[in-house]
Length: 370
Ligand SMILES: Nc1ncnc2c1ncn2[C@@H]1O[C@H](COP(=O)(O)OP(=O)(O)OP(=O)(O)O)[C@@H](O)[C@H]1O
Ligand SMILES: CC(=O)N[C@H]1[C@@H]2OC[C@@H](O2)[C@@H](O)[C@@H]1O[C@H](C)C(=O)O
Image (tube, rainbow, N blue to C red; front, top):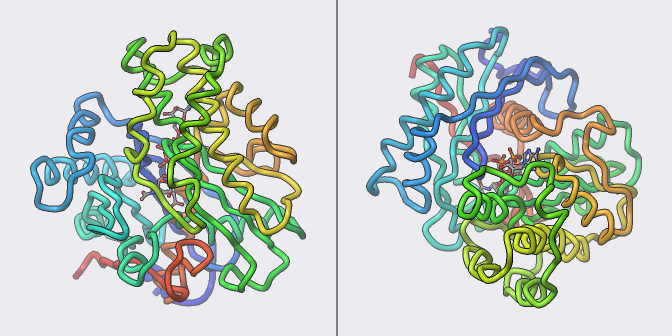
């Protein structure tokens, strides 16, 4: 039966992402056989309400069973059920959930939301909990988009190395050589979180201006970067770890404190420069220079951040739209792609993407009737 998605041919997978910036849920349909990107389908976004966001914020950093976590999971499940029930034609769902805590070498990784609940509501197989088995096998459990980036590099017809940069709350970079036979081939990928991206600027705007973000990077554009803050930031031990490596949203919580004596504009400029500096530091790990860096995630709308990146990186830095991809939906599509791979017993991460001991397929599968 096509609905199980368990054959080998192409299926329509509906992927979701509820990212670290807690703004809302993205969902996108993708037609794939788990190897290739074949066609993009409809996509949609459902913002969290202020009340929902408050519930999620209150549960950040918490683990299953701790106060507020059940409420957060219910918010996540309700928002996803509402959004996903608007779609027709999906054969399966890839449900990322909302990361509340991430401590791969400690307590593990925690994405709120139960896929079994969604499977029953949507009457579809749901693949979820993508990160846990990678962590159990010694990996970082993140980033997981790199296997999809490999497929995207092939889809856009790239023949040599390029990189994908996601600028969400946290930033992550994937260096790809699409000439190699597949994502697990040694040398095909190198991926890691770069550092904080938009989260500190958002937190600053919220604290000082009562706004959610620095629209277009307008405030940062009028400020002066404090070089001493950037230097101290780059001394953080994270930048001396070899990749693969991953971050929790709050791992750089002290950064906001470091700009507390600066004016609003100088603080915004400095935090934006920190995000760019973290990416540039990350790019030093690239095995070979990429022909271009393609940027997805909300940070690509921040002109000041994009200009700072272009200045620091020695190659063109362009939004993924420049090659016909959708920078708002790339992560949701990634979890559609990974869901098909999980259902078919294919790997979703490998030593070069998460540091896992060997290529591994993560994810639980919940079926509507189980
Ligand atoms: N027009 C804009 N101007 C400035 N910044 C923007 C703009 N649009 C989005 N952003 C930034 O991008 C963020 C959202 O990015 P995105 O949706 O990619 O994050 P996420 O998926 O939640 O995070 P992650 O990828 O870390 O899980 C916003 O919180 C904001 O900081
Ligand atoms: C633990 C977790 O949820 N990490 C997210 C987060 O948001 C960006 C960055 O940090 C990345 O590591 C990851 O998400 C993307 C989608 C990934 O796994 O590729």
